[in-house]
Image (spheres, rainbow, N blue to C red):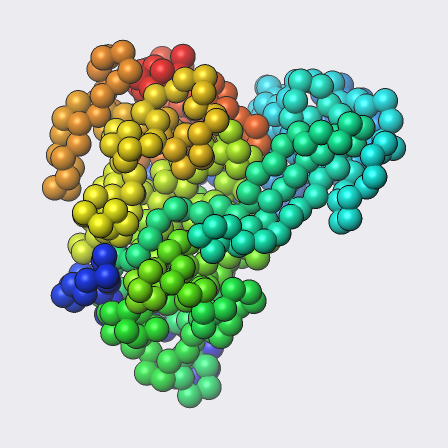
Length: 520
């Protein structure tokens, strides 16, 4: 076989749960067909077409700013363009003011096929203006001046980053926004986005896309943007070593073989990439055909996994016993989808928008699990169900009734934004379950669910396929960085209307599902 030629071989997998070795199971992922085009697949899915569309939007940015009646010191920077099947072009912009980035000033224009502006979705409706761009407090080392538009009135601010380590060993990169006049901290949140899960799970026998190199093979997926999987060798920085093998048969299905974690991570990344392409019509995380990469064996007895925008990569610890890597299929889909969110709505990882960010990863991670159609790990609405993080066989999170985990919110109330984002995410997770499956008791793939509503109402589900199209369209075309739950309802209503019509049963179910979680 010639060097660098993509190959596919079967690799055996197993997993360790709750530090007890469980027998090796097998199950080959089945082939899928692409979802039918129901008006949601972007016409700009090809990387080259997307790049051209963004350049064109940037060329017209000045006239767009004038049409939107932005101030003379404001400029637009085109970040993404999606043209849907109905011909509407959704262009996402960042804003600057007097050359300074406007944090919370992002907006999306929606232009009809005839070139007429239909509407605009803004992160803020406030007029962007500050009396001075000179900071009155001492500029922090490494900080940059920005305009903070996340409050009721835009102010000059300093954006800085503090790095370190969180209590559980996860790297910390905290973003801090400080008022440049008063020194008051306006916002502070952790940018490293974790799944909050532990240990590992089975995926059975799977196919891997690898690359021949020299006399052996490496975990480089030439079919999916060149995704690579690295072994950090218990390190906490860099990439470590690219995982290689002599005979293209990887791992032994247990945590005793270091390759097993790499197999899970590589497989999870491939399934997530395929889900994005086949179901969402998206070419990779950022829509540009470029892959992220995966790092396994992070730290010593690290019980977590995380996505990091700065490296555009997923990272997995080995669990408390260093033999139970957190490389499960739904975990991989969850982490990779944090990158998708960053590349689209870029939801702030704090408050209600942080809950929506975390829920989006749960929603897509769950959808990847259903999409993979793996006989060993069938699709369900349980998050981390095979991890046994609680030691009693229960999952980390439940989408049908989030409060069953002891902390997540089933329904919205005015304090939900004060909760940890992994708990406030329950509102959106519950909404998605109700939208897809409906309320009440039912059994899906052998799992029993019983989803209540806040007011005792009955919600009729529209099916997971339609629900995921609505959520993705809302995320990529209508949500902005500061979207809260009320705005998420509006975004999904717009998405459902675009896809299925203003009088559709799908739109009625969207409304009923949001009402069912008390978002009215």
